[in-house]
Image (cartoon, rainbow, N blue to C red; front, side, top):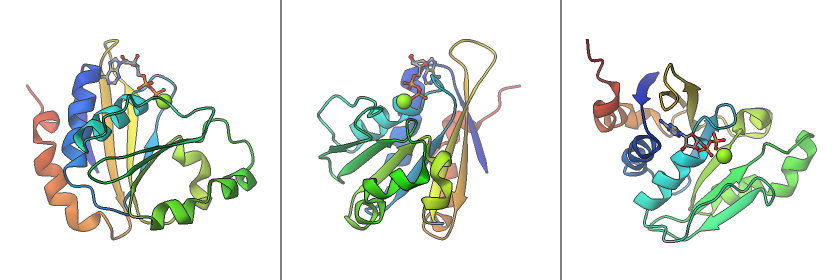
Length: 162
Ligand code: ADP
Ligand code: MG
């Protein structure tokens, strides 16, 4: 696990941009954390780094947004999904096969429906209003070869000051 800290939304965006630099078509990123923890802020920074020109907003009601970038981005928010059955309507396997990067807010809620190969990013509130802890877990082989690169990319946020 890689643990990082940010203390402004722009920093969470910059951290996401650093991760986006390592993204490949077909990647899945699962975003975990309470309301207001920074999941959408992460996607905004991630998308911007992939050249998404549109304003990225939370797809809470539409469930999925698609953006054009250097790699296409699918942004899902499954907060409102109550039955795992509803996940079938999202056609996840097709999204994941389509050469895009897929980011799913509240993705832990549909864990049984996910492939077992993804990057999990967990957001937790810290002491100050703008403090967040961002933990990265690599599941499966897709991201495992990139762990060292992830650590290097996130160096700025993982350094503990004394
Ligand atoms: P979520 O999608 O997890 O519900 P959002 O990204 O929509 O959360 O909202 C996060 C909120 O917290 C925003 O209002 C943002 O300005 C604020 N915020 C404060 N500090 C941070 C930080 N370090 N990282 C991300 N967001 C932060
Ligand atoms: Mg959100």
